[in-house]
Image (cartoon, rainbow, N blue to C red; front, side, top):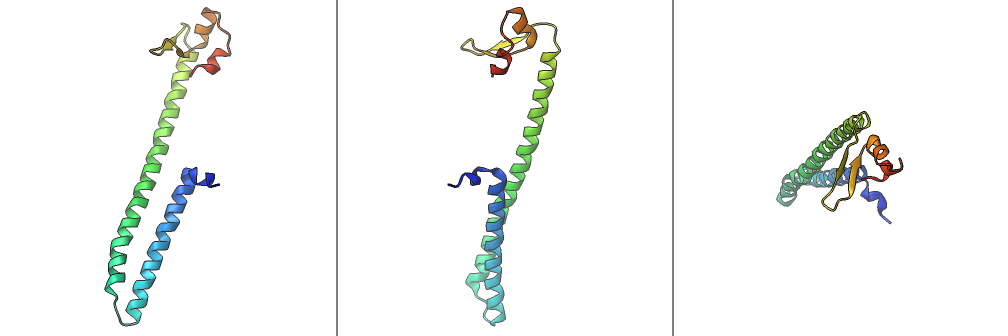
Length: 124
């Protein structure tokens, strides 16, 4: 039902909207009490305590999202470089895990050992 909340950008937008609403409602209460000539200490404390408590996580979330995007871009670039190196090697290259499963190989390795080219897409 709420699958759309799994999207990182949607969560970030919801957090920003919620933060803005809380700050506006609290600020409105503070302004109203000031205009009425009765500075409500509870509302003032609420504003002073809630605004940073709500804004700081929103800023941290934004920074985390930006750092994750940068990390993802770096990993993608490194993977492209690795694939380019493997694809252009004249030697057969492979890597196996602890259970002796093939986890990476280049096209030359498949041709040396008579493996079907489809193996390249299945290796994880």
